[in-house]
Image (tube, rainbow, N blue to C red; front, side):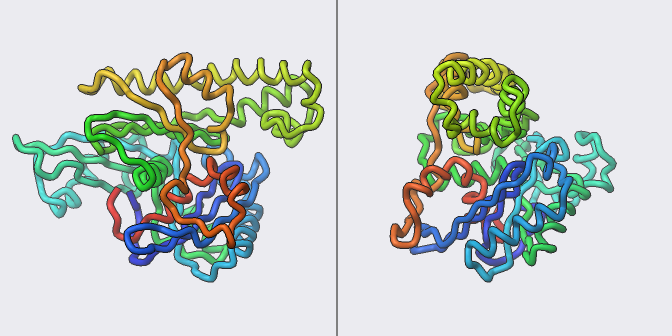
Length: 356
């Protein structure tokens, strides 16, 4: 769902708490081709709980990824998530989109904990012909100051954001472009980042549930850092298995033990959200869980999800149905970076004026 809309094909820029990801796609018939992909890492204190703390560093990294991509286009789509965002599925009397646009602010006032003048509100009718005088509407309210932060850093970096999307909707958009689901299947998509997990459920081909959880891979990094008394960078290397000292079986076992414990607590939060969805919907179960995001590849996370949820877990490939020229891109490198590219791919698939 775009909170602001324009008209052209866009550069997708995902400004995450640990990295900035850029994707540019080009339509080729009914398919898509990868034009650009670049990645710039951020220090751990640059973005905290979805709020930009170090504007200068974020702007510099944005300029770096644009320079690395070689793109000249400035129009882009960006995304936000976190506690500054409220997403509600509403059951309302059947009305036209024009009538909904007139009444949505009044509806929003009943559900958001912020002053209505401090938020941007957008909505989408999910089933315009539901019958029986009712329709389902997805409403999104985002705090203006947070939206302005992200638009400001993009503008300072020489970009022109014409779509402000929601991270989980962008991830779901990416998923829909790459995976076909039977209409009777219900699945969950988890976008697992450094400081948050965006939970989305697709049922009957539609977005049925979303929730943002304030926990992510940074929790494991902090636990490793504290346990071994090492720097943030060293702890990240331990977590990903890149540190040569992990050749010590004792250290490796201890890292795995910490990872199992932390991932178990993360999965417990996910389970509570999915249990809430199942308790409040007509669906009896979720058939599969799909993972994307920078923390998605942690073996301990996958093990914990499969053990606690008793559901098959699959890593998403955001380039699955996207043509990639091996003469222009390092395919192995792209596959290693695939887990972090999901939201950026979803944003690059947006066109101004798109619905959810």
